Length: 171
Image (tube, rainbow, N blue to C red; front, top):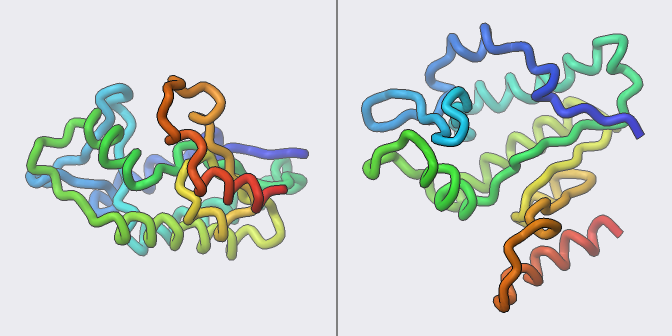
């Protein structure tokens, strides 16, 4: 199987950088970045122009002759809401007064992006890395990276019904 991670070929920073409204902004209208990766900015998944651009860009990647034979796309870091709030924003440049979207708002907009990408790439496979089972119906395959290298303990967190659902869907 031939896959590509769009981030490897994104090459669209010049376009993206001109749309400040596509970025997740703090209360001072500054872009929110990761503390671990200061040049990594969080995008506002609610922005429909950003959603459309992302979907179209993935379709455009298929027009490159060296990519036309791809079987699909793999998206890393397809966060669940709890991962986004607890880990991503917790490790970001965002102040304690950072604007936070609701769980349903976040999840519904990530699903909207995935569905738009799915529609644009036709029969190509769409695979994501993320633990939220609600994304599974919008993609062809889903993995949960943390399940393989997690910090194990005696909680049942790692054997949730969501993981079982994802495993059933892909089997």
